[in-house]
Image 1 (cartoon, helix red, strand yellow):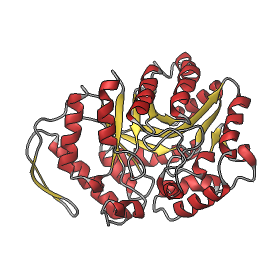
Image 2 (cartoon, helix red, strand yellow):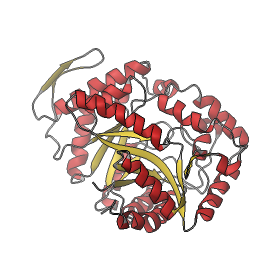
Image 3 (cartoon, rainbow, N blue to C red):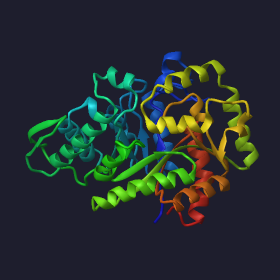
Length: 367
């Protein structure tokens, strides 16, 4: 089966250094050289579309622009590009979310994908008025998704759960097609929810063996539910014509990071309840004393991004062929969708689209 490639909309800002407006780093001050104006985001979206990406992920949180509003505004700026809209179940009612997704699907003519973000940062969740603990949030997400799918059935839907309750929930019309649900989470509380409700399980970019282990667990849980999932991975990318050029660019990104900013970010992220975040932090340990290649945690997999950025913290770094090799290795372990990004997102969309994508086409991995 051929791969699906997605890009990223930098609604927190963009630049030629690692933009640090994510999660804990936001409090340390501005660093984005390019503000996330609609005109700039439209450039990135069109670049993604021109370079063969199927969709673009838009993040969610207090550190970025709202994903629903931003992507809706970009529908008319593109023709075929899909929008992987991230949102948090604890901040919107399930009936409203089902309605919003259905409306988006109709006005975009089938171009919405949904990324359900349960949330692993208690501080961030409380900003939205969500006081559930980690495991409660995942339990609520399961109920939320059951209601959303019930609303999409086209018939009035009743549900009475531990966290959520609706009566006669319905919308004007069921979406056609029904938007696929992307879902991530590495904890024991998250995996069963993914197995039961997700269409695509997303993981952050750990080394292939660790990714394979996680996929096996989710696949087994899904099979127990009589379901079959697709699997995707969230990574950054930095590819050039030669390996040396790519690593030199990674070195520039590392050299531009203030050590105090690393310490600040890692201190804040260490308090995260997210198991995925903890696994990302374990890859680099907050250390830079080994230089740029000292953060290479697997051949051509670089953990330097995660020094100052919460969430996905690893990048594919190397020549176009080397990056394609690692993508092919992930694919061999079951990954079918790649959600990629790079700094700056406009230029890196072209580096990947003109360098790596043709190599993937040549190998029969991309149509």
